[in-house]
Length: 189
Image (cartoon, rainbow, N blue to C red; front, top):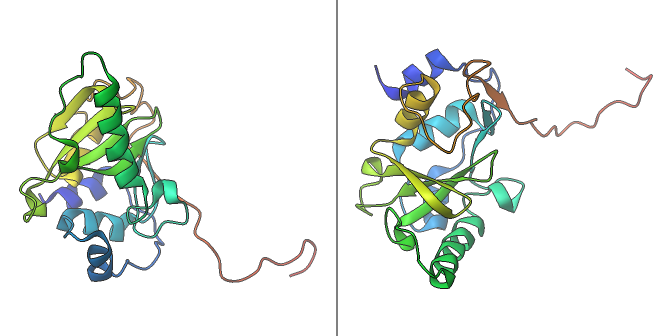
Protein backbone atom coordinates (compact mmCIF):
# COMPACT_ATOMS: atom_id res chain seq x y z
CA UNK A 1 0.00 0.00 0.00
CA UNK A 2 1.44 3.43 -0.90
CA UNK A 3 2.42 5.45 2.19
CA UNK A 4 -0.15 8.23 1.58
CA UNK A 5 -2.95 5.66 1.27
CA UNK A 6 -1.76 4.02 4.51
CA UNK A 7 -1.60 7.42 6.23
CA UNK A 8 -5.10 8.46 5.18
CA UNK A 9 -6.40 5.09 6.41
CA UNK A 10 -4.72 5.66 9.80
CA UNK A 11 -5.43 9.36 10.10
CA UNK A 12 -8.30 10.92 8.20
CA UNK A 13 -7.42 14.11 6.30
CA UNK A 14 -9.69 17.14 6.66
CA UNK A 15 -12.66 17.47 4.33
CA UNK A 16 -11.56 20.97 3.28
CA UNK A 17 -7.97 21.99 2.64
CA UNK A 18 -6.53 25.17 1.15
CA UNK A 19 -5.63 25.08 -2.54
CA UNK A 20 -2.35 23.33 -3.29
CA UNK A 21 0.69 25.57 -3.46
CA UNK A 22 2.21 26.35 -6.83
CA UNK A 23 4.91 23.68 -6.45
CA UNK A 24 7.17 24.85 -9.32
CA UNK A 25 7.16 28.34 -7.81
CA UNK A 26 7.90 26.96 -4.33
CA UNK A 27 10.80 24.91 -5.68
CA UNK A 28 12.14 27.94 -7.59
CA UNK A 29 12.03 29.97 -4.37
CA UNK A 30 13.89 27.23 -2.47
CA UNK A 31 16.34 26.57 -5.29
CA UNK A 32 15.69 22.83 -4.99
CA UNK A 33 13.11 20.22 -5.84
CA UNK A 34 11.02 18.77 -3.02
CA UNK A 35 10.03 15.14 -2.44
CA UNK A 36 6.85 14.16 -4.26
CA UNK A 37 5.44 12.53 -1.12
CA UNK A 38 5.72 15.85 0.78
CA UNK A 39 3.86 17.70 -1.97
CA UNK A 40 1.09 15.07 -1.97
CA UNK A 41 0.96 15.10 1.85
CA UNK A 42 0.58 18.89 2.05
CA UNK A 43 -1.98 18.88 -0.77
CA UNK A 44 -4.00 16.17 1.03
CA UNK A 45 -3.81 17.45 4.61
CA UNK A 46 -2.99 21.16 4.43
CA UNK A 47 -1.73 22.92 7.55
CA UNK A 48 -2.29 21.40 10.97
CA UNK A 49 -0.87 18.96 13.51
CA UNK A 50 -0.59 15.22 13.71
CA UNK A 51 -1.55 14.03 17.21
CA UNK A 52 -1.33 17.59 18.51
CA UNK A 53 2.44 17.23 18.31
CA UNK A 54 3.94 17.13 14.79
CA UNK A 55 3.59 20.24 12.62
CA UNK A 56 4.99 20.25 9.10
CA UNK A 57 6.27 23.49 7.62
CA UNK A 58 4.14 24.75 4.75
CA UNK A 59 5.15 26.85 1.73
CA UNK A 60 4.23 30.52 2.24
CA UNK A 61 2.75 29.94 5.72
CA UNK A 62 1.38 33.05 7.43
CA UNK A 63 3.98 32.72 10.20
CA UNK A 64 7.68 32.82 9.34
CA UNK A 65 8.17 30.18 12.07
CA UNK A 66 6.20 27.63 10.02
CA UNK A 67 7.09 28.85 6.53
CA UNK A 68 9.06 26.32 4.50
CA UNK A 69 10.00 29.10 2.07
CA UNK A 70 10.84 31.66 4.76
CA UNK A 71 13.96 32.28 6.84
CA UNK A 72 13.39 29.41 9.31
CA UNK A 73 15.26 26.62 7.45
CA UNK A 74 18.45 28.70 7.03
CA UNK A 75 18.15 30.05 10.58
CA UNK A 76 17.94 26.55 12.06
CA UNK A 77 20.92 25.32 10.03
CA UNK A 78 22.91 28.32 11.28
CA UNK A 79 21.91 27.59 14.87
CA UNK A 80 23.04 23.97 14.53
CA UNK A 81 26.42 25.14 13.21
CA UNK A 82 26.79 27.69 16.02
CA UNK A 83 25.89 25.19 18.76
CA UNK A 84 28.37 22.73 17.26
CA UNK A 85 31.16 25.36 17.21
CA UNK A 86 30.44 26.48 20.78
CA UNK A 87 30.26 22.96 22.25
CA UNK A 88 33.27 21.67 24.12
CA UNK A 89 32.53 18.21 22.86
CA UNK A 90 30.28 18.50 19.79
CA UNK A 91 27.80 15.69 19.38
CA UNK A 92 27.70 13.69 16.18
CA UNK A 93 25.27 14.94 13.55
CA UNK A 94 23.57 12.52 11.17
CA UNK A 95 24.94 14.68 8.32
CA UNK A 96 26.56 18.06 7.88
CA UNK A 97 24.24 21.03 8.56
CA UNK A 98 24.11 22.07 4.90
CA UNK A 99 22.50 18.68 4.14
CA UNK A 100 19.83 19.08 6.85
CA UNK A 101 16.72 20.90 5.63
CA UNK A 102 14.19 21.65 8.41
CA UNK A 103 10.61 20.84 7.46
CA UNK A 104 8.76 20.37 10.72
CA UNK A 105 8.64 20.97 14.44
CA UNK A 106 7.36 18.99 17.41
CA UNK A 107 5.42 20.04 20.46
CA UNK A 108 8.45 19.50 22.70
CA UNK A 109 10.78 21.77 20.72
CA UNK A 110 12.32 19.15 18.47
CA UNK A 111 12.70 19.51 14.72
CA UNK A 112 12.17 17.29 11.70
CA UNK A 113 14.69 17.50 8.86
CA UNK A 114 15.15 16.03 5.44
CA UNK A 115 18.62 14.63 4.96
CA UNK A 116 19.04 16.08 1.47
CA UNK A 117 21.37 13.49 0.00
CA UNK A 118 21.54 12.86 -2.87
CA UNK A 119 20.72 16.54 -3.44
CA UNK A 120 19.30 16.02 -6.93
CA UNK A 121 17.06 13.09 -5.93
CA UNK A 122 14.61 14.42 -3.31
CA UNK A 123 12.45 11.30 -3.42
CA UNK A 124 15.39 9.45 -1.82
CA UNK A 125 15.80 11.91 1.06
CA UNK A 126 15.45 10.39 4.51
CA UNK A 127 14.35 11.89 7.83
CA UNK A 128 16.20 13.10 10.90
CA UNK A 129 14.59 14.19 14.16
CA UNK A 130 16.38 15.94 16.95
CA UNK A 131 15.73 17.42 20.33
CA UNK A 132 16.03 21.23 20.35
CA UNK A 133 19.02 21.33 17.95
CA UNK A 134 21.10 19.17 20.28
CA UNK A 135 21.75 15.49 20.75
CA UNK A 136 20.18 13.02 20.51
CA UNK A 137 19.36 12.57 16.85
CA UNK A 138 17.04 9.93 15.43
CA UNK A 139 17.16 8.98 11.76
CA UNK A 140 14.55 7.19 9.70
CA UNK A 141 15.52 5.56 6.43
CA UNK A 142 12.46 6.45 4.38
CA UNK A 143 10.24 9.27 3.17
CA UNK A 144 8.36 11.74 5.36
CA UNK A 145 5.01 10.08 4.67
CA UNK A 146 6.43 6.62 5.41
CA UNK A 147 7.89 8.06 8.65
CA UNK A 148 4.48 9.40 9.70
CA UNK A 149 2.83 6.06 8.90
CA UNK A 150 5.49 4.21 10.88
CA UNK A 151 5.20 6.50 13.91
CA UNK A 152 1.39 6.70 13.88
CA UNK A 153 1.02 2.93 13.48
CA UNK A 154 3.43 2.35 16.41
CA UNK A 155 5.90 0.54 14.16
CA UNK A 156 8.64 3.09 14.88
CA UNK A 157 9.26 4.63 18.29
CA UNK A 158 11.13 7.94 18.23
CA UNK A 159 12.87 8.20 21.64
CA UNK A 160 12.31 11.95 21.99
CA UNK A 161 8.57 11.74 21.24
CA UNK A 162 6.28 11.43 24.27
CA UNK A 163 5.26 7.93 25.27
CA UNK A 164 1.60 9.01 25.31
CA UNK A 165 1.69 10.43 21.76
CA UNK A 166 -0.90 7.94 20.51
CA UNK A 167 -3.05 7.61 23.63
CA UNK A 168 -5.95 9.19 21.72
CA UNK A 169 -5.14 7.43 18.46
CA UNK A 170 -3.62 8.89 15.31
CA UNK A 171 -5.42 12.15 14.52
CA UNK A 172 -4.84 15.19 12.36
CA UNK A 173 -6.17 18.56 13.51
CA UNK A 174 -6.26 21.10 10.68
CA UNK A 175 -5.30 24.69 11.34
CA UNK A 176 -8.15 27.16 11.06
CA UNK A 177 -8.59 28.21 7.45
CA UNK A 178 -8.50 31.93 6.85
CA UNK A 179 -11.83 33.22 5.66
CA UNK A 180 -12.06 35.89 2.99
CA UNK A 181 -15.62 36.67 4.07
CA UNK A 182 -16.01 38.88 7.13
CA UNK A 183 -17.91 37.30 9.99
CA UNK A 184 -21.36 38.64 10.69
CA UNK A 185 -21.70 40.86 13.74
CA UNK A 186 -23.25 39.12 16.77
CA UNK A 187 -27.02 39.06 16.54
CA UNK A 188 -27.01 39.61 12.76
CA UNK A 189 -27.45 36.85 10.15
